[in-house]
Image (cartoon, rainbow, N blue to C red; front, side):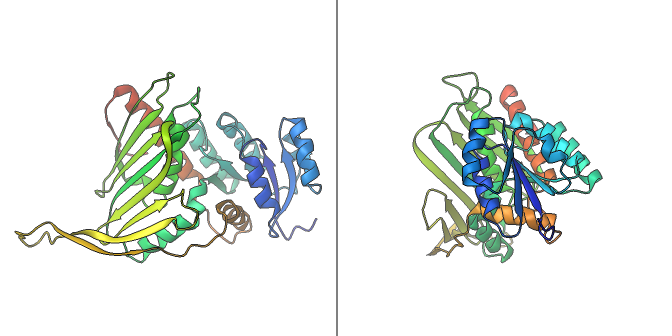
Length: 339
């Protein structure tokens, strides 16, 4: 195989891995050489779908192959650290599913190792690659929203109650990945998490509050116990507000020319003055987020692009989740000097 294009290996073909395999295999910009999983029956099934891919139960086949440039890891979180560390030590670029690691200390080890090896470490924050988030970022860059004021997200449904983690670790990671596309996690000054458990030892309904030194405020509501599925995110600014509804099949974003007009430099006896204008529904690119992410990872390996979600952001997210656990235990806000 010509080395004019990067060679990719994918480890973990259970829940999320098949989606990654499908998208990487569909790219002309790379060659998928390996698929790896411990389940032999699963590998036989994929071998029929992808006859040009070598399927193995042994990750050493990947580490020892100098042709492999990048490794995509889609295993359970508990296996991320050791696999990513082995891949980096073997001189491979890495794209790892979120959360990047089980602890922020493990995350720092991977970030430092990637720098030492001069390899890219990316995290699979899929929402960061959606057309909806790209469009909202364009609105922010064009100052169409004005100064950002708040982020209010609801992600609830009647979901599977996890035995080894809480609902914030399971669901809020998606909202945090969206949030991180708009603001800098380094600006967080306070984290407060609270919730309730009804069927197990881990909370099934959770609320996560983040304060930023810029005055920006974020609230994330997640639940496994809702009779309806809601995926609403509101980003409010001084000029306009955006509603992102991920359950909508096409019109996922609505931009509302609504707000409050007020000049802090002048006394105004008629304050507040409410503004209500048009609603804009922007046209969105139909490209699948995972396909865009796969293409981006290949471009990073080729030196054509810089990571949108580098390992340091993945580490920061894990640290936020750890601090949310600490807040839950203390039932109090946690002050943050630095993540």
